[in-house]
Structures are given as structure tokens and as C-alpha cells.
Length: 478
Ligand SMILES: Nc1ncnc2c1ncn2[C@@H]1O[C@H](COP(=O)(O)OP(=O)(O)OP(=O)(O)O)[C@@H](O)[C@H]1O
Ligand SMILES: [Mg+2]
Image: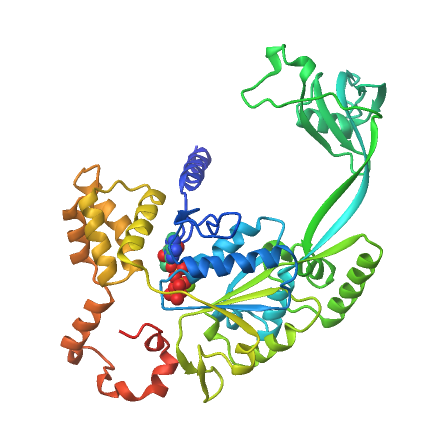
């Protein structure tokens, strides 16, 4: 009985988990929102305003797609909350699935169980795709009949049968073994389906139902797709294309880790010899025309967290012939380069800055903020009255866009607590008084500093110390 009880609990948990839909900070971004001539539309694909930066990002995107950007680097610079990360996500979305896009935060490379440069190398190689072309032999046809011989009584596991396939020109009967019968059953293949069978692996794929069967409603669901009966020979050669990243090839070929490490993410350091071997193998494939390189994008957010060693590594790596496009972002002004006592714009060494093209983002107007908040309300599925939106926009203008965005969900919870259906001004006010923003928090601290530990307000002008704490160096000078 007890056992039954626990399984019930588990089932419940599983159900609850699948219902959660995560809404990320950038989940409303679906591209850069540009038209064919790369002009930014006022509001499109979740993107609002920031026209110049989006246009510039569009040019970068076009160059990436045409493959003449690799080994180059773009810096997105601007005050906090002006859409730098959002634009990078927009580029990722617009590139589509076949171009590798790796996104890391500058601080990430310090927290892994490997050296900084190994972490960067892995991120680099994750961002370079190898498109491998393979010719396989397949059988493609419409199923005329499936015959299965009943296994002899006593449950002998050997099953046999016959499969009749036809194309517009021919019809052939194939003998079936146990495995094929199982996969036919698994795919629920029946007469009238058009299928392909991969000759090497035996994998069966259902393409749809033949048009000639469109009248027979029994075997039809709401999503049934109809296809033509294949033409010509039943056996065909087909070109299949896979895109894998260099990093994936590295991991699979490094005997220590094996491919399972791809799933656990626990790849450890990979030996340089392994990489060398793989590079020469890939070069060989390219010469033979079996593979091409797809330079992807490596996005390093909060790049000021890298130190001088990493920057120097990047300088070098960008010059190698297998380099992805590097996009970096920062909100820092002139500040100390980590690992040195020197200051430099954005905390990036001048020699790397010299290799970059720089896109700047600027603060939003009231109208744009309103539009972004509207989009977020929709994304988070929150109904809000016009007055409340107006107030929220004003709050965003006076505090920050992020603070206002956080208020959407909390105001909606306050609203449902009072059984309201639409967030009203009072809900916003309530949340505004419950959760304070940066400015109020600072004022509060200034007022009551003596009651806190470690207060050092007088040291304000000691900049070098501030550097290590980060935040104070943000670009927005108020
Ligand atoms: N132009 C825009 N259109 C739509 N949403 C935007 C736009 N710009 C910013 N946002 C949204 O506003 C929030 C803050 O922007 P984002 O995180 O991109 O700022 P950031 O410039 O990366 O700031 P930081 O320097 O602090 O990292 C995000 O949720 C982002 O999706
Ligand atoms: Mg950001």
C-alpha cells in the first residue's frame, strides 16, 4: 500500500513540473525586427526602439550569414538596461538553428573546474560548426501491405513478415526481421503511409499519408499530412547534412570523457593533442568536400569580468583560421582592467579594443519604455489597465526599466490576491511601497548607515577600491 502511495505522489510532481512555463528576461525577443533592407521596424519581433544599434546589429548579422565576419569582434557598449543582451539574443534568434551561437558571461570562466583559457577554448570551439555531408542509401515508397507471420505458439521471439512498397513506377516486396517489425509497429506504419527506410541503420521515418488514401477517414487524425506517392526507383541516394560543433567532436573523441560528458556538461580539460588531431581530420574532410565550416557566434556578456590573460588569449585566438564571430557586451565606462593597475575604456585593453567594431546603445524614451512594458505584460500574461501602465512607465523612467519590469509580476500577484482581474494603479502603488528600488535603497542606507555593519561612505573618492566592487563604475553617470 505504501508503495502505491509514493508512486502517486511522484506522478503528481511530474504533472506540476510540466505545467511550469519559464518566462526569461529576454523571452519576448524573437529577432532584431528589421525589414529586408535592414531598416529597423519601430516595433517588431519583440524589439522596440534602439534603432541605430539594431541597424548596426543587422549589418553584423548579414555579414555573419555571408560568412565574412569570422575572426572579427563586435562590442556592444552602453548603460545598464539599454538592451545590449537583448540585441545579442535577437542576433541569435535571427541566425536560426544551423549557426552555432554560444552565450556565456565573463565571470563564468572563473567558476569552472578548469583553467580560464581552457574554458575560453571550449566556448570558442562550441561556436564553430562543422557541416558534414553524408550520402546514405534509403528506400522510399508507399506502403501497399504489411504482412506479419504470427510467431509460433510458445512465444518464440523471432518474428518475420513481408512489406510491400511501391513508387509510381515499381512495386517490391521486402522481407522483414524482428527489428524492422518492431520499428514499423513503433512508428504505427500502416498501408497507405509513405515512409523512408535508412538502409544502413534501418531507421524508419513516416513522411505522411498518400494522397490516394485521402478518402479513407479511418486512419486519419487532425494532423495527418498528405504526400505524393514517391516517383522513380524505390532505392535512392540521399544527402543528409548534420551540423556539429568542434567542441562536440572534441568531447566525443577524447577517450577520457566520452560522449556522455556532452549530457552532463562535465567535460573537464581536453588534451591539445586531441584538438590537433581533430583539426587536421576536419581539414581533410574539407579538402575532400565532405565537410564545410560554419563559423558561429560566441557572445561574452559582462566582458569586463575577464582579466588581462583572457583578453590576451582572445587577441591571439581571433587571428586563428578557425575563429567564430566574437560579440562582447559591457556597461562599464573607463575602469581598471582586471589583473592590472591600468585603466582603459570599458575595462578592455586598448590592443583588443583596436580590433573591435563598437555598437553603442542609449537610454530609452518614455514612449519606448511604455512599449517594452506593454510587450512584457503580454509575455507574462498580465492584464493591466491603461492608468497602471502609465504609472509603471513613469516609475521606469525615474528608477529603471528592470525595476518596472519586475513590478509587473508582483503587481499581478497583488491583484489576484484581492481577486481583481486587471492590475490597477493601487496594485502598482502597493508593490512600489513593498519593494524599494536602487535609489530609495541608497537613500535609506545613507540615512541609517550607522546601524549597518561595514559602512564606508566617506571613502567615496577612493576609486581603486570601488573598482573591485564593480557596480559603482557603471556607465550611467547620474
Ligand atoms: N529594445 C528593446 N526591445 C524590447 N525589450 C528590450 C529592449 N531593450 C531592452 N529590453 C528588455 O529590457 C531588459 C533589460 O535589457 P538588457 O538586459 O538587454 O540590458 P543590458 O543592456 O544588457 O543591461 P546590462 O548592462 O545591465 O547587462 C531585458 O528584459 C530586455 O529584454
Ligand atoms: Mg546585459
